[in-house]
Image (cartoon, rainbow, N blue to C red; front, side):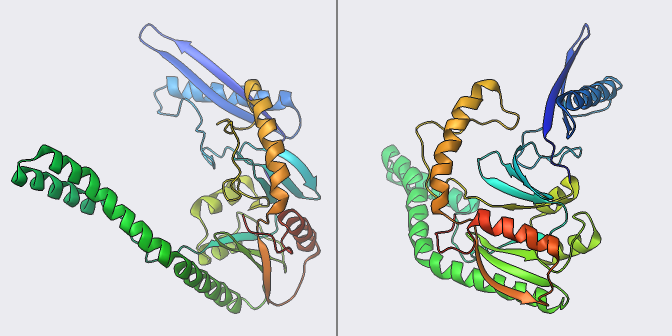
Length: 326
């Protein structure tokens, strides 16, 4: 499992008469800060050498939520460790459980049948407004329709969707649960715990351990239609992940100052504000659950390491409570 405790950054610059090349790379380590810096320096020098030779490479490493580029692990603060499981805090403040061999999968239940304004429909309404303005010889009328018709159509669709949403969400969750039950039926040796999440369901396999990059895990995640970024992340980090504290916007957490847009390790000037933000988040998060246990499926066989991870997961998520999901 690649969940580094230490991170370091390296920057190299090379000037020529015609241009300046700046290369930035990260290094990581479980041993020491010095070891992380050594890797960062090595990776930066390697990238500089390849760029100078004419190869097209990124000058800087991306700031995406799930990096997974050039096998760079996610940069997250390590909060605690429970046996082989590691709790980290992600870029938007939530805690995540990382485990090297206990299978987790989130299955989203996306409502279908929601009305959406297409680009073609929006253009037709704009053209209608322009034509009306020309026919009536009124610039104000045409401009009003160009602005007002798309807005009115969007507002009407929003009201229709609002009325449909509850029914569509219930249907989507029913269909997702049916698919999960079919998955379980086809794998009688498996033992799954099923949790409800705000977006669908979470599965925890209790019967055995899995290699996150192995064929069995990949086949199962594909069969469950798991997010492709998550599948790649499992392979790159050598672990399965599950968010175990609420998303701040779902618990309507608002503060006067926004969470700084930076990633671990944070710039020194962002640390005080981020700490203030996290303290306020931690005061509110116990009022919400991240998922709720609803049922067992399958063989009932329990691997002791999976049981240990389940206990940590359920405690952090407040999975046995009746708290609102976030």
